[in-house]
Image 1 (cartoon, one colour):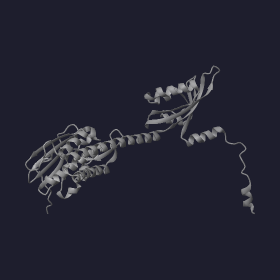
Image 2: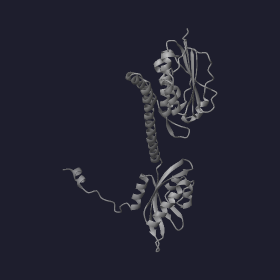
Image 3: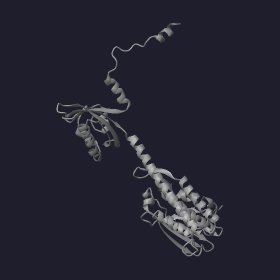
Image 4: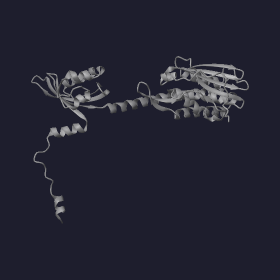
Length: 369
């Protein structure tokens, strides 16, 4: 055994005067980034640590404040609930626990939590002193609100998806001649829905809230990718974001138009071009123009009386997003104008970034040397 072994067995000496409860409390408050206060209720004076005025965004840092200065920083809509909680604590002797917003002078709206307790009453039972703590909970509230928005959005999008699938099944069941044909119709539309969902992304809108969005130009590019050899001309500027739930519906519409164009129109072997542009004369919302040319007549989507699968599907999708659709057909050409309401656009101002009006004559792009 050596001296080191002996030293390990000796008790560690304690200081003659241990830390006070106040010292331990200050360490705990600092670790939790909390501010403490003592409210002298009869005088209306709050004695506090230097962290409290910073939490409330007060312009001066002192040790004593009239309580009205703190209430002046609280959001007016939250004051009645705070008053009620304080009065209940005074009357019933229970702790008050509250959360509220403050209009911070440099940091904007912040969320503050408070926990207080009546610690002294006079001989008649009237409350004289309250001790308490406050701390910033902005980050936690933002996370909770984001989770709530996500849950609502997921519920909304799943509901929309089921409604869309139910509509597709109903139309296909009425129009398909064989189970195989019905299966093919539904499979193609499910692929379009999946692709639209895959390119959705979260973007902050102009109000600062995040929303699931789809870039309109990219959506068209993804839907038309199987026919890239026909060089469809997508003359849509990037950055026009539409809400994801509307984007999935539009994907179904674009896919139906593209498959019809591949069979008989601008993307077929006899086709001479497909161009998708924006109408620069549209003032409210966004007007998209889908125009096909072919060396032979472009057949209608509704060959049978009462409307075929394609016509019914396009009409149903347009109604589901509040869009207006108009078709113009002539020998060798088909033009579909789709007016999208401003309500499905994330950034309505993006509509101002429209290209110049497209010329009437166009065809496939041919490389030249």
